[in-house]
Image 1 (cartoon, rainbow, N blue to C red):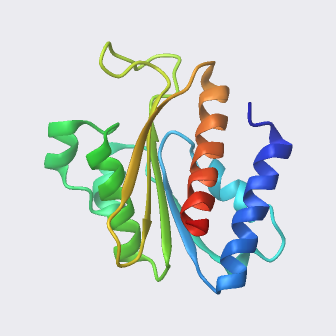
Image 2: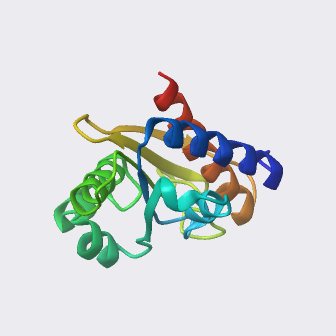
Length: 164
C-alpha cells in the first residue's frame, strides 16, 4: 500500500525528473480530489515544475474546464478510457505544460456497478505532441485506500513514462 512516505518518495522522483529536464506538469483529478497536486506541491520548489491542478469532479466540470465532450461522457461514462484521455487533452490545450495526468474513478463506498465496480479507476498520461496513454485499474479497499492507490499509480506511471 502507498503510505504517505511512499507517495512522498514518488512525488520527489517526479520532481527531480521534471526539474532536471526543465519540464512542466499539470493534473486533472476527479476521484482523487486534488491529492496528486497536494503530494506534488508539498515539495519545496514545486513552482519550478508544477503548473496547475484542476479538480474536475463533476461531469459538468470535466466539460466546462477541460473540454471533455458531453457526448463522450454520455456514451462511455465519466469513468472511462475515453474520458480520461479527453481530460489530458484538455489539460494540454489549456495549460502551457509538457506533461498531463488525468484520473477518473469510483472511490466508493457507493457508485459502483457490475461493469464498473467500486475501485475502478482510469488514469491517463500524456506528453505534449504525443497521444495519451491510459490504463484501467481496479483497487481494493475503502475510499481512502482506493484514492491513495490511485495517486501512487498516477505518479509511478508518470515516472515510468519520463524514464522510458
